[in-house]
Length: 196
Length: 131
Image 1 (cartoon, each protein chain N blue to C red):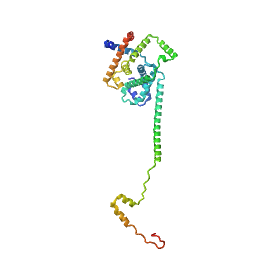
Image 2: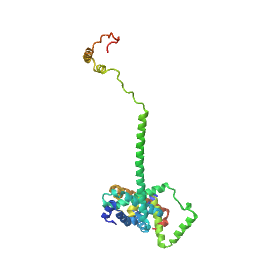
Image 3: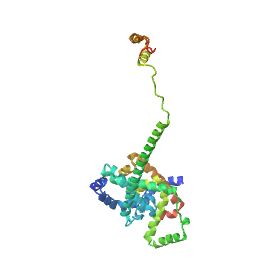
Image 4: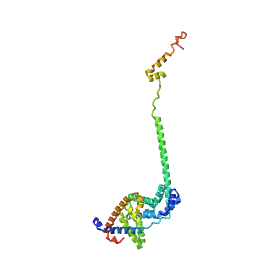
Protein backbone atom coordinates (compact mmCIF):
# COMPACT_ATOMS: atom_id res chain seq x y z
CA UNK A 1 0.00 0.00 0.00
CA UNK A 2 1.17 3.50 -0.80
CA UNK A 3 -0.21 4.88 2.48
CA UNK A 4 -0.31 3.31 5.93
CA UNK A 5 -3.45 1.94 7.50
CA UNK A 6 -3.56 4.74 10.08
CA UNK A 7 -3.88 7.34 7.31
CA UNK A 8 -6.76 5.39 5.80
CA UNK A 9 -8.43 5.19 9.20
CA UNK A 10 -7.99 8.90 9.82
CA UNK A 11 -9.39 9.73 6.38
CA UNK A 12 -12.29 7.40 7.07
CA UNK A 13 -12.98 9.34 10.25
CA UNK A 14 -13.19 12.59 8.30
CA UNK A 15 -9.63 13.92 8.50
CA UNK A 16 -9.21 16.01 5.35
CA UNK A 17 -5.41 16.11 5.67
CA UNK A 18 -5.31 12.31 5.61
CA UNK A 19 -7.66 12.26 2.64
CA UNK A 20 -5.41 14.70 0.76
CA UNK A 21 -2.44 12.46 1.55
CA UNK A 22 -4.28 9.48 0.07
CA UNK A 23 -5.17 11.40 -3.09
CA UNK A 24 -1.59 12.59 -3.50
CA UNK A 25 -0.30 9.05 -3.07
CA UNK A 26 -2.73 7.37 -5.45
CA UNK A 27 -3.64 9.95 -8.07
CA UNK A 28 -0.94 8.93 -10.58
CA UNK A 29 -1.90 5.29 -10.29
CA UNK A 30 -5.60 6.07 -10.62
CA UNK A 31 -4.95 8.34 -13.59
CA UNK A 32 -2.93 5.59 -15.27
CA UNK A 33 -5.56 2.95 -14.66
CA UNK A 34 -8.36 5.21 -15.85
CA UNK A 35 -6.36 6.12 -18.96
CA UNK A 36 -5.93 2.46 -19.85
CA UNK A 37 -9.53 1.60 -19.07
CA UNK A 38 -11.28 4.41 -20.93
CA UNK A 39 -8.71 5.09 -23.66
CA UNK A 40 -9.56 8.80 -23.91
CA UNK A 41 -6.84 11.13 -22.66
CA UNK A 42 -9.08 14.20 -22.59
CA UNK A 43 -11.47 12.73 -20.05
CA UNK A 44 -8.99 10.87 -17.85
CA UNK A 45 -8.69 13.61 -15.25
CA UNK A 46 -12.44 14.09 -14.95
CA UNK A 47 -12.97 10.36 -14.37
CA UNK A 48 -10.09 10.24 -11.88
CA UNK A 49 -11.67 13.12 -9.96
CA UNK A 50 -14.95 11.25 -9.97
CA UNK A 51 -13.11 8.24 -8.48
CA UNK A 52 -11.76 10.33 -5.62
CA UNK A 53 -15.12 11.97 -5.04
CA UNK A 54 -16.69 8.54 -4.75
CA UNK A 55 -13.87 7.56 -2.43
CA UNK A 56 -14.60 10.59 -0.26
CA UNK A 57 -18.30 9.74 -0.14
CA UNK A 58 -17.86 6.04 0.57
CA UNK A 59 -14.75 5.91 2.73
CA UNK A 60 -16.85 5.88 5.88
CA UNK A 61 -18.26 2.51 4.79
CA UNK A 62 -14.82 0.89 4.56
CA UNK A 63 -14.72 -1.43 7.56
CA UNK A 64 -11.37 -3.04 6.86
CA UNK A 65 -8.68 -0.50 5.94
CA UNK A 66 -6.49 -3.43 4.83
CA UNK A 67 -8.57 -3.84 1.69
CA UNK A 68 -8.30 -0.18 0.77
CA UNK A 69 -6.44 -0.74 -2.49
CA UNK A 70 -8.89 -3.27 -3.99
CA UNK A 71 -11.65 -0.95 -2.81
CA UNK A 72 -10.05 1.92 -4.73
CA UNK A 73 -9.62 -0.29 -7.80
CA UNK A 74 -13.26 -1.19 -7.55
CA UNK A 75 -14.25 2.48 -7.45
CA UNK A 76 -11.93 3.16 -10.39
CA UNK A 77 -13.39 0.32 -12.43
CA UNK A 78 -16.97 1.35 -11.67
CA UNK A 79 -16.36 5.01 -12.47
CA UNK A 80 -14.68 4.02 -15.74
CA UNK A 81 -17.55 1.69 -16.61
CA UNK A 82 -20.07 4.45 -15.89
CA UNK A 83 -18.09 6.81 -18.09
CA UNK A 84 -18.00 4.26 -20.91
CA UNK A 85 -21.74 3.69 -20.62
CA UNK A 86 -22.40 7.43 -20.80
CA UNK A 87 -20.05 7.75 -23.75
CA UNK A 88 -22.03 5.12 -25.62
CA UNK A 89 -25.16 7.23 -25.26
CA UNK A 90 -23.29 10.34 -26.36
CA UNK A 91 -22.37 10.79 -30.05
CA UNK A 92 -18.63 10.45 -30.39
CA UNK A 93 -16.67 13.18 -32.07
CA UNK A 94 -14.68 11.70 -34.89
CA UNK A 95 -12.07 13.29 -37.11
CA UNK A 96 -14.70 13.98 -39.79
CA UNK A 97 -16.74 16.00 -37.27
CA UNK A 98 -13.85 18.22 -36.24
CA UNK A 99 -13.26 21.67 -37.59
CA UNK A 100 -10.35 22.32 -39.93
CA UNK A 101 -8.50 24.10 -37.16
CA UNK A 102 -8.94 21.16 -34.81
CA UNK A 103 -7.70 18.74 -37.50
CA UNK A 104 -4.61 20.88 -38.07
CA UNK A 105 -3.95 20.95 -34.33
CA UNK A 106 -4.33 17.16 -34.13
CA UNK A 107 -1.94 16.69 -37.07
CA UNK A 108 0.59 19.01 -35.48
CA UNK A 109 0.42 17.03 -32.26
CA UNK A 110 1.11 13.79 -34.13
CA UNK A 111 3.88 15.49 -36.07
CA UNK A 112 5.73 16.39 -32.88
CA UNK A 113 5.90 12.69 -31.93
CA UNK A 114 8.67 12.16 -34.37
CA UNK A 115 10.68 10.09 -31.98
CA UNK A 116 10.95 6.50 -33.15
CA UNK A 117 10.28 5.07 -29.74
CA UNK A 118 7.15 7.12 -29.40
CA UNK A 119 5.95 5.96 -32.78
CA UNK A 120 6.52 2.36 -31.83
CA UNK A 121 4.65 2.82 -28.55
CA UNK A 122 1.87 4.56 -30.39
CA UNK A 123 1.63 1.62 -32.80
CA UNK A 124 1.49 -0.83 -29.90
CA UNK A 125 -1.26 1.19 -28.24
CA UNK A 126 -3.26 1.35 -31.46
CA UNK A 127 -2.87 -2.36 -32.04
CA UNK A 128 -3.92 -3.22 -28.51
CA UNK A 129 -6.77 -0.76 -28.54
CA UNK A 130 -8.03 -2.36 -31.72
CA UNK A 131 -7.57 -5.84 -30.29
CA UNK A 132 -9.31 -5.04 -27.02
CA UNK A 133 -11.99 -3.15 -28.91
CA UNK A 134 -13.04 -6.44 -30.49
CA UNK A 135 -14.18 -7.95 -27.18
CA UNK A 136 -16.84 -6.74 -24.78
CA UNK A 137 -16.26 -3.89 -22.32
CA UNK A 138 -16.41 -6.37 -19.45
CA UNK A 139 -13.77 -8.62 -20.99
CA UNK A 140 -11.59 -5.64 -21.85
CA UNK A 141 -11.70 -4.22 -18.33
CA UNK A 142 -11.06 -7.59 -16.71
CA UNK A 143 -8.08 -8.31 -18.94
CA UNK A 144 -6.59 -4.85 -18.47
CA UNK A 145 -6.88 -5.15 -14.71
CA UNK A 146 -5.30 -8.61 -14.75
CA UNK A 147 -2.72 -8.41 -17.52
CA UNK A 148 -1.82 -4.72 -17.65
CA UNK A 149 -2.50 -3.43 -14.14
CA UNK A 150 -1.17 -6.70 -12.73
CA UNK A 151 -3.87 -7.30 -10.13
CA UNK A 152 -3.71 -10.68 -8.45
CA UNK A 153 -6.67 -13.08 -8.36
CA UNK A 154 -7.19 -12.17 -4.73
CA UNK A 155 -7.38 -8.48 -5.55
CA UNK A 156 -9.66 -9.13 -8.48
CA UNK A 157 -11.95 -11.12 -6.20
CA UNK A 158 -12.39 -8.01 -4.06
CA UNK A 159 -12.85 -5.77 -7.07
CA UNK A 160 -15.53 -7.93 -8.66
CA UNK A 161 -16.92 -9.37 -5.44
CA UNK A 162 -17.00 -12.91 -6.82
CA UNK A 163 -15.34 -16.11 -5.69
CA UNK A 164 -12.10 -17.39 -7.15
CA UNK A 165 -13.64 -20.09 -9.30
CA UNK A 166 -16.13 -17.77 -10.95
CA UNK A 167 -13.34 -15.30 -11.57
CA UNK A 168 -11.12 -17.94 -13.14
CA UNK A 169 -13.92 -18.95 -15.47
CA UNK A 170 -14.50 -15.31 -16.44
CA UNK A 171 -10.82 -14.76 -17.03
CA UNK A 172 -10.47 -17.93 -19.07
CA UNK A 173 -13.41 -17.02 -21.28
CA UNK A 174 -12.26 -13.43 -21.71
CA UNK A 175 -8.81 -14.62 -22.66
CA UNK A 176 -10.21 -17.14 -25.13
CA UNK A 177 -12.23 -14.43 -26.80
CA UNK A 178 -9.30 -12.06 -27.03
CA UNK A 179 -7.08 -14.86 -28.34
CA UNK A 180 -9.61 -15.51 -31.06
CA UNK A 181 -9.65 -11.81 -31.94
CA UNK A 182 -5.84 -11.80 -31.85
CA UNK A 183 -5.61 -14.71 -34.26
CA UNK A 184 -8.17 -13.10 -36.52
CA UNK A 185 -6.28 -9.80 -36.58
CA UNK A 186 -3.03 -11.53 -37.36
CA UNK A 187 -4.68 -13.42 -40.19
CA UNK A 188 -6.23 -10.27 -41.58
CA UNK A 189 -3.07 -8.21 -41.38
CA UNK A 190 -0.06 -10.52 -41.37
CA UNK A 191 2.28 -7.53 -41.61
CA UNK A 192 1.35 -6.62 -38.09
CA UNK A 193 3.00 -9.79 -36.78
CA UNK A 194 6.21 -7.95 -36.40
CA UNK A 195 4.60 -4.85 -35.11
CA UNK A 196 4.38 -6.00 -31.54
CA UNK B 1 -11.22 -18.15 -39.01
CA UNK B 2 -12.09 -20.74 -36.38
CA UNK B 3 -10.04 -23.37 -38.23
CA UNK B 4 -7.07 -21.02 -38.39
CA UNK B 5 -7.45 -20.22 -34.70
CA UNK B 6 -7.71 -23.85 -33.72
CA UNK B 7 -4.87 -24.93 -35.94
CA UNK B 8 -2.48 -22.37 -34.49
CA UNK B 9 -0.39 -23.46 -31.56
CA UNK B 10 -2.33 -22.14 -28.54
CA UNK B 11 0.71 -21.77 -26.35
CA UNK B 12 2.47 -19.72 -29.02
CA UNK B 13 -0.56 -17.46 -29.32
CA UNK B 14 -0.79 -17.18 -25.56
CA UNK B 15 2.83 -16.24 -25.32
CA UNK B 16 2.45 -13.64 -28.09
CA UNK B 17 -0.59 -12.23 -26.34
CA UNK B 18 1.34 -11.96 -23.07
CA UNK B 19 4.09 -10.11 -24.91
CA UNK B 20 1.49 -7.76 -26.37
CA UNK B 21 0.08 -7.02 -22.94
CA UNK B 22 3.55 -6.36 -21.58
CA UNK B 23 4.37 -4.07 -24.50
CA UNK B 24 1.07 -2.30 -24.00
CA UNK B 25 1.85 -1.79 -20.31
CA UNK B 26 5.14 -0.12 -21.26
CA UNK B 27 3.59 1.86 -24.09
CA UNK B 28 0.88 3.44 -21.99
CA UNK B 29 2.19 6.71 -20.60
CA UNK B 30 1.52 7.54 -16.98
CA UNK B 31 -0.55 10.69 -17.20
CA UNK B 32 0.76 13.54 -15.12
CA UNK B 33 -1.92 15.06 -12.89
CA UNK B 34 -2.64 18.71 -13.53
CA UNK B 35 -1.31 21.23 -11.04
CA UNK B 36 -4.80 22.18 -9.94
CA UNK B 37 -5.91 18.58 -9.44
CA UNK B 38 -6.35 18.87 -5.67
CA UNK B 39 -8.00 22.33 -5.59
CA UNK B 40 -10.43 21.26 -8.30
CA UNK B 41 -11.17 18.03 -6.44
CA UNK B 42 -11.89 19.87 -3.19
CA UNK B 43 -14.03 22.40 -5.04
CA UNK B 44 -16.07 19.56 -6.58
CA UNK B 45 -16.40 17.81 -3.22
CA UNK B 46 -17.59 21.06 -1.61
CA UNK B 47 -19.96 21.69 -4.50
CA UNK B 48 -21.44 18.22 -4.21
CA UNK B 49 -21.74 18.55 -0.43
CA UNK B 50 -23.58 21.85 -0.80
CA UNK B 51 -25.90 20.47 -3.43
CA UNK B 52 -26.58 17.46 -1.19
CA UNK B 53 -27.39 19.78 1.71
CA UNK B 54 -29.65 21.83 -0.55
CA UNK B 55 -31.36 18.66 -1.76
CA UNK B 56 -31.89 17.50 1.83
CA UNK B 57 -33.31 20.91 2.76
CA UNK B 58 -35.61 20.78 -0.29
CA UNK B 59 -36.80 17.30 0.69
CA UNK B 60 -37.62 18.48 4.24
CA UNK B 61 -39.41 21.54 2.90
CA UNK B 62 -41.42 19.44 0.49
CA UNK B 63 -42.36 17.02 3.25
CA UNK B 64 -43.40 19.87 5.52
CA UNK B 65 -45.46 21.49 2.77
CA UNK B 66 -47.13 18.17 1.96
CA UNK B 67 -48.05 17.68 5.61
CA UNK B 68 -49.38 21.23 5.88
CA UNK B 69 -51.44 20.79 2.73
CA UNK B 70 -52.84 17.51 4.05
CA UNK B 71 -53.75 19.15 7.38
CA UNK B 72 -55.45 22.05 5.58
CA UNK B 73 -57.40 19.62 3.43
CA UNK B 74 -58.49 17.66 6.47
CA UNK B 75 -59.68 20.83 8.24
CA UNK B 76 -61.58 21.99 5.14
CA UNK B 77 -63.19 18.58 4.78
CA UNK B 78 -64.26 18.66 8.43
CA UNK B 79 -65.87 22.06 7.86
CA UNK B 80 -67.58 21.19 4.59
CA UNK B 81 -68.95 17.74 5.29
CA UNK B 82 -72.35 18.12 7.23
CA UNK B 83 -72.20 16.64 10.65
CA UNK B 84 -74.85 14.13 11.76
CA UNK B 85 -77.73 15.66 13.72
CA UNK B 86 -77.44 15.43 17.52
CA UNK B 87 -79.77 13.03 19.28
CA UNK B 88 -82.51 14.76 21.28
CA UNK B 89 -84.53 12.87 23.84
CA UNK B 90 -88.19 13.84 23.92
CA UNK B 91 -89.18 11.48 26.66
CA UNK B 92 -88.47 11.63 30.39
CA UNK B 93 -85.73 9.76 32.04
CA UNK B 94 -88.07 7.16 33.44
CA UNK B 95 -89.74 6.60 30.07
CA UNK B 96 -86.45 6.09 28.45
CA UNK B 97 -85.29 3.81 31.24
CA UNK B 98 -88.38 1.66 31.01
CA UNK B 99 -88.07 1.43 27.23
CA UNK B 100 -84.50 0.34 27.44
CA UNK B 101 -84.86 -1.97 30.41
CA UNK B 102 -87.88 -4.07 29.34
CA UNK B 103 -90.90 -5.52 31.13
CA UNK B 104 -89.10 -6.64 34.26
CA UNK B 105 -88.74 -3.01 35.24
CA UNK B 106 -92.40 -2.29 34.85
CA UNK B 107 -92.71 -2.53 38.60
CA UNK B 108 -90.56 0.53 38.87
CA UNK B 109 -92.94 2.38 36.57
CA UNK B 110 -95.90 1.27 38.73
CA UNK B 111 -94.16 2.55 41.81
CA UNK B 112 -93.58 5.85 40.09
CA UNK B 113 -97.22 6.13 39.11
CA UNK B 114 -98.32 5.15 42.63
CA UNK B 115 -96.18 7.87 44.14
CA UNK B 116 -97.66 10.55 41.90
CA UNK B 117 -99.68 13.13 43.93
CA UNK B 118 -103.49 12.94 43.71
CA UNK B 119 -105.28 15.59 41.63
CA UNK B 120 -106.13 18.78 43.60
CA UNK B 121 -109.74 19.74 44.25
CA UNK B 122 -111.10 22.65 42.17
CA UNK B 123 -110.48 26.14 43.62
CA UNK B 124 -113.77 28.00 43.81
CA UNK B 125 -112.04 31.43 43.92
CA UNK B 126 -110.58 31.58 40.43
CA UNK B 127 -111.85 28.42 38.84
CA UNK B 128 -108.33 27.14 38.30
CA UNK B 129 -107.49 23.57 39.26
CA UNK B 130 -104.54 23.30 41.60
CA UNK B 131 -101.84 25.99 42.05
